[in-house]
Length: 109
Image 1 (cartoon, rainbow, N blue to C red):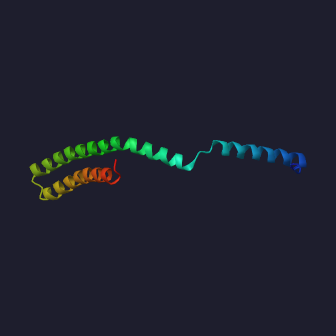
Image 2 (cartoon, rainbow, N blue to C red; image 1 turned 180 degrees about the vertical axis):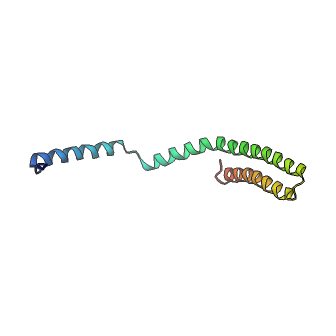
Image 3 (cartoon, rainbow, N blue to C red; image 1 turned 90 degrees about the vertical axis):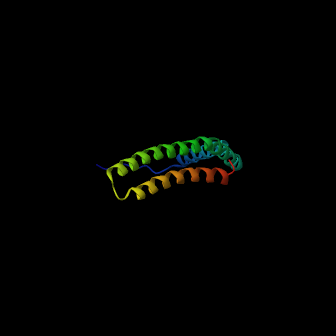
């Protein structure tokens, strides 16, 4: 089945240009100052930072408890690699606490 395509007439192209112009003008009307947007993003990120730091401390505490239980189980079972497991769990907890503290002091929040 053959479709008939009609070429664009001058009336059609004026309508398309009008729609394009209106679309672009509404975009420029909604645009805001770039500096104001950056300042707003900075304010929002800084407002969430304390909650994120507290969350990292809580995750570190939970990992510490899980690690303590795992190390205790290995110690009671007499596994020879108990020291390595204890160092790994302790290191991960210290890492979370240090990272949260360093980031907080680095960004001055």
